[in-house]
Amino acid sequence: MGRSRASARIERVHDEPAYVLHTHAWRETSLIVDAFSRHHGRVALVAKGAKRPHSALRTVLLGFSPFAAAWSGHGEVRTLTRAEWLGGVAPLTGLSLLCGFYFNELLMRLLPREDAHEALFDAYHASLSLLGEAGYATRQQVEPLLRGFEMDLLRELGHLPPLDVLSSSDEPVREQGLYRVDAQRGVLEHAGDDATGAVTGSQLLAIAARRWEHPAALRTAKVLMRELLGYHLGSRPLRTRQLLIDLHQL
Image (tube, rainbow, N blue to C red; front, side):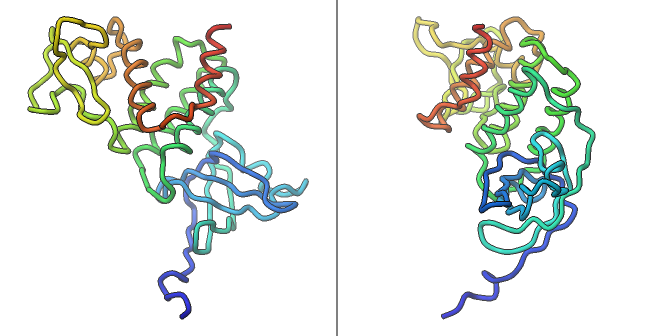
């Protein structure tokens, strides 16, 4: 039996805002582009002839540079038919560039193909714009951006529990209370006398509201996001996270 009409239907998309997350060579002159698009999520596109010296695609299919994409086809890999640079984001440099690679690795590892998340796309675009404005950013400048994007990603994928209420009862978190955050069960009251691993209610409320000026909010959020991301990423470590750690130690 042949394929059904539905499975063989050719999809045509035009003027779709997108970013390049990753590319790899395909045949002699072409690329497979892993793109993050606003309305179609993460898609695989073959960019025919993109490696040729005079191809117009060479100056468009760059990391951290928004473009309007058009593609057609069906199946797992579509054919890129047009790509037009949109501009509006300053080139990333230094630490900002490394943070951009970190965002891309998170999206590649956690975002399923063709799972649209418009709010996440907007958060990614806004984060890259802020990183571009920061130029050669310092760790103090990028920490709030890193934590904010991690929270946006986890929330959009349904992996970030509400941090201002108890998961078991929906009772509000108290500023003076002690809590712990479980990747599966959410915010729980901390039991026992040993406060190791506990988070104060005031810290949780500050993280939930992204009040990064609160004492210890950024440091606590960093530990919390690392634990939540680690649970969903599995045992394979993030390459860019280790680079960020090594850079900080230097």
